[in-house]
Length: 489
Ligand code: SF4
Image (cartoon, rainbow, N blue to C red; front, side):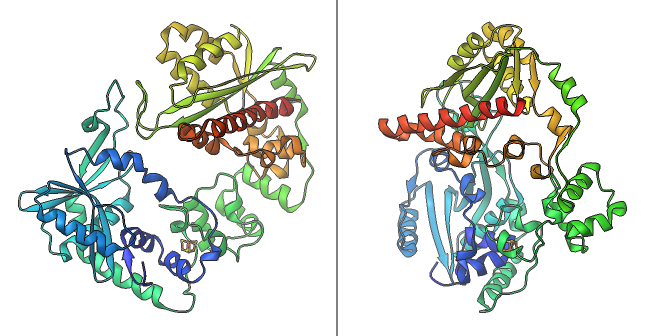
């Protein structure tokens, strides 16, 4: 956009969420934190490309930085009698949009907005309403407006079936109702961004919903070091409600503890932080937990990834696909053996993973996971998929223990855990400043999301790069189970 008041559909949606985002984009972009906007994640190109064929053949308006070129090209294609136009571009009075699919309907057109999600979000309606408004201003007769999204009950068997992979929802009425609202929203957003000084705007739930805003740190710079937003697991809606009623600092929370019905866990988090209390250990309960384990202990951790468009048979959109595990086998004398699995890039890793898992963990062995509900679900799904391995897989599942329990129950409590019992908080609390256990010191892959992305993208890399990524993935997952060994100790 060349002018600050120009609005594309994504800028319009940003302005709907909070116009200050647009103002900051224009005047203080350096304050944005480096987060990948969820809106970008949702617009997977693979999904968009596939969706174009939903109605049959189509003409594509190729991307150009010169918007007018795309608009002219769209006009040309419309004159040819094309039935479907992908990325059909329109412009009017500083407003611009490219429609994912413009589908001819008699003497008019249907707008089809494609999202790589599995359901409609309210912000999608705003997005479609903007497109409907703009195309109407451009003189098109819009018959219907559809949202096309992935159908998560579809399971791939053989060739992809686009009619089943995608669900088409008619949003015409909802979008039409918003016509006048779009006009007033555009005018309000334009007035807001036109002021040269920073307009006042307090933080609220729109800072995290529908998308996390990159300016949250900047706009929340007035908050004290420990605020209501730092309470572990507090819902955004609750936190912002308290904030707006003047309950901001931990001291404010304590002063209103009764009225807020402050939970024991939050009260403890505040008490430990404000009074700088030392770690607390309930030795008896921890001993009882340890008494439930038998050696050798099999420390197990899976990595999974999701495919919006299933690439393999027996997979649904966004289904968790396990592709890797690490296993540290610990004897009673503390000696360790390490086993691991990492699927071959671009192939369905599940069968090979399941076969190796039942070889690596013998029947009746005591396995241990941190937050075992995840590992148990992965194993249950594998058992359903491979009936011939289900007995052994379910045996592993049944004999699994959860290392998270003593921390969830606060039998070990440290202020460094900040009220959380995730291993990413527990580990540094137990081993502060230990470089061997610091995920920041790893190369390339530092967390589960990066591991998923690395595996998903591997087929597009060169053999040398793949070797490097595999090395990084193995190191990362290996640290996950080594961390469990250290936590158990
Ligand atoms: S942090 Fe909140 S107030 Fe600030 S720009 Fe983002 S959404 Fe708006």
